[in-house]
Length: 126
Length: 227
Image (spheres, rainbow over the protein chains, first blue to last red):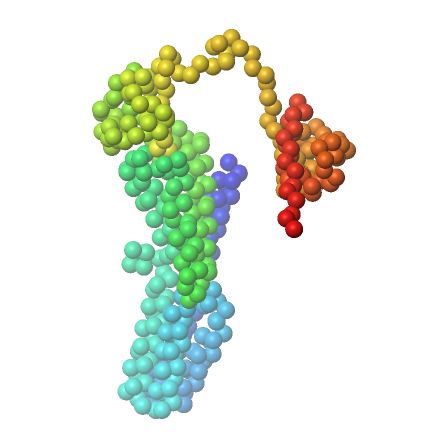
């Protein structure tokens, strides 16, 4: 009975940790999405230096999470996200408003989809 | 990651249910829950091994989840008779008093050819000599012959055979297994005397040696290296 008890506790603990992981990852992506939204508004106002600063914050924050993301997220997704961040940054630096808007929208979608993949929904499970 | 956890649980219990419905024939010496874990575990662990782009945790998490499920299910089977019957089923009698039970055969999807094949593997060629043939929960067929067809035991013949004890390995490939030696009720001094009387000088000159509690020894010396 002890072994079964330990197994049940372990299952419960794993599930609780995974739920905590979802909320942590969603918190991170929400923070990054907010920064991307700010950058998008700034690009619309053609304030490229401020938009660039927001995106640099996004890039730095994403790089800081490297240890966490490599353990928990598939490396393909990490690469796609990194590509999207630097593509948006490149367009903002080159001050091309239309291209920057498109790449910022793509970056936001990447962030939303990576968070959605971690969430427990019927779509992600099945 | 939580998605992988939930998916593992769903797949485990779905496989358990599907294999239960497939019947005993699919099992073959493993209980249902053991077979499901055996089928799943190797594949799940192999995924991050083959693709280094997948975090190792993606492979470890389902393995640990399956281990926990297996402990839980085997624990439940042990304690609850109803769930044991539900998950493992119960043995089915396929032959009773030399008569093949068609309904039981049909229920277990066991053909006559398969029954004969299984009986032949048990050295039974004539079904009429079988009192009971039972399909066990792990898919194995056991046959009980009529008393007149069974081998005669020493007891039935009124003989009293010599009681032999279980042989304990004390030297394995030139290495002394000290715990086994003590279990056999012997010590190293006795062992050295025994091997010296057989022409060996040291323990490493002996390839294999067993002894039982009555003192019977089986001794194989180490082969000399060819020069």
